Length: 209
Image (cartoon, rainbow, N blue to C red; front, side, top):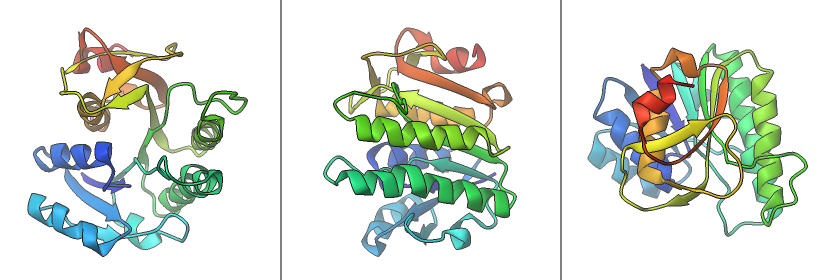
């Protein structure tokens, strides 16, 4: 399966690309800056240039699945959060529909809520609006909602539940492993769930959703 990873240069997404490259799938890394290409060349992963503020049909065409792992980043203004995390996500969904890419995995956030009053409410609202749009597209979607991301080593153990909320941490390695597994687990289609570091093996946790 040819998997387009949008936002591939991010910390979590790069881990995901690395995992996919070692497995049965063929990842393609969508990047914004040609300078980022060398990292993926070293992994033997092809790249495509694309910017979520503009049409990305050229990147989506020919893919079998999309993992949306892009984000405006913590050092940009609220306007960029809307442009990338919300409108950019919708742009990728429309492109998926146009080019008949049915499988779509969204990297969202725990506590995403259109009525959020959190410290990063603009981010949680943008992610919630994007998630809600995805649910209405008819795509074979999965929405994965991690807690606060860490660079801790992956334990391969998590807790996954549609009812998770509040504080909690998720290692990027565990998250990348879960995102990769979701591509092959049909029971995760049409599901939205929280993912935190925990005690259950990732494959068991995902299969129990």
